[in-house]
Length: 104
Image 1 (cartoon, rainbow, N blue to C red):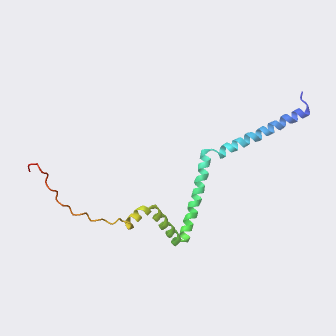
Image 2 (image 1 turned 30 degrees about the vertical axis):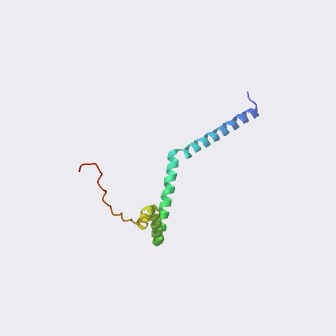
Image 3 (image 1 turned 60 degrees about the vertical axis):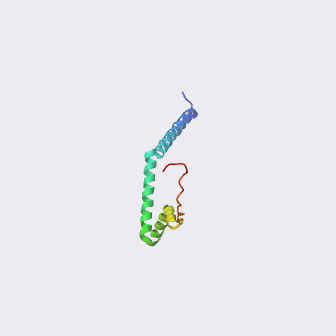
């Protein structure tokens, strides 16, 4: 036979255990790789749509940004086009005298 306080404590433990198990199950679901990937994909999709809307609203600004990014990406080849080192003409060659003591 159990006392009323012991029975209440056992019932309280069962309730808290059920809450803990539900919390653990919920955390497992939230932290599952497939759930995380799904949320990331949804966020990327939303940002892509927002970007498309912004480009459609301001195409000139978008073209300017794209040109600036392109210039940053290909800055070295562009720099090589405008900063060529001048070529120095080669000095005229003088013929070398033949070595003495050889039969030629």
